[in-house]
Image 1 (cartoon, rainbow, N blue to C red):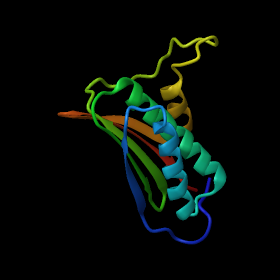
Image 2 (image 1 turned 90 degrees about the vertical axis):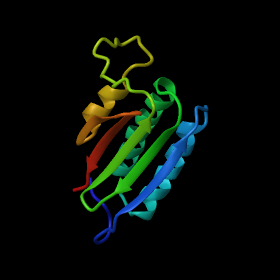
Image 3 (image 1 turned 180 degrees about the horizontal axis):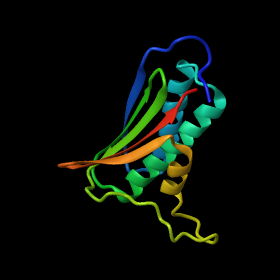
Length: 134
């Protein structure tokens, strides 16, 4: 995974997430624009978009109140973070079966991200992940 071209400056976006069927699509579009402008290669971009989709979906489905996606392209990594007002920390669903259509989001994040975690806050939490750039 690498970025194309020379050194990058830090680039970021912040997107408010509404509890809507179009939220995931809007988040993917905004993130793709950011990654294109930062000259991130296609494979890395698609992995970052998948990670963001999982984070956003979890926040919209399981969080409550206002939620935000923050995405930052740094020199060595793409950082994605979703903040919502639920204080419940997510955990990977280790009991998901082949027949289950849902429940794999954090398992995917754990498998594809370089690092991920949950940062509790007094009014909610931030679930974040990073994807290293080679």
